[in-house]
Amino acid sequence: MDASDEGLMLRAGAGDREAFARLYERHKAPLLQFCLQMLRNAEDAGDVFQEAFRYLYIHASTYRPTAKFTTYLYRIARNMSIDILRRRRRWNLQPLDPALDLAEPPDLREPRLESDEIEAGVRDAMEEVPPSYREVVLLRVLRGMEYAEIAEVVEAPLGTVKSRLHAGLEFLRRAMRRRKLAE
Image (tube, rainbow, N blue to C red):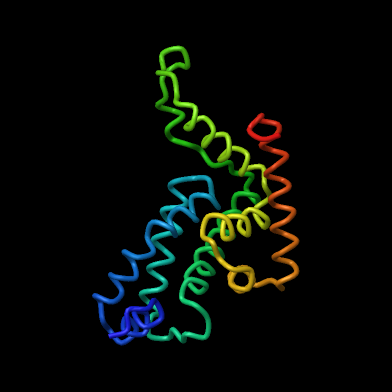
């Protein structure tokens, strides 16, 4: 049996639930991380994550492996994320972090580890990167995708992907310098 992503998806399209479950297990953590990084809101990211896999399940029988499976999956999640970002912008909605509402006053909190502070600083800096650049940076740096695969996911020419990556990394560097996380 073919255990590649494409093979599992074809089997899922033929009704093999176990094949779909294997795909889900294989891709749930990285896809959820991508959604969280794109949307910066756990509830929205969870919704997109679930809807992406729901869409995948419903349309499994129509899947054709013309590109890598991960390209197909991340394109679905990306498009759903962009819809949410557009709605936020239209209604001027800002994502709320429920953890902030429950946080203790600053003087009562335990000191944070330096690595946690750096990680939080990088996440905050990433928020300053515009979404079209952020998605390219995330796909390249966190997911390790090749330029051609990123171009398919974001539906942009290869040159555009390269320039967005360069600009996105520059946005990130500047934001990190302001936070004194980089020189």
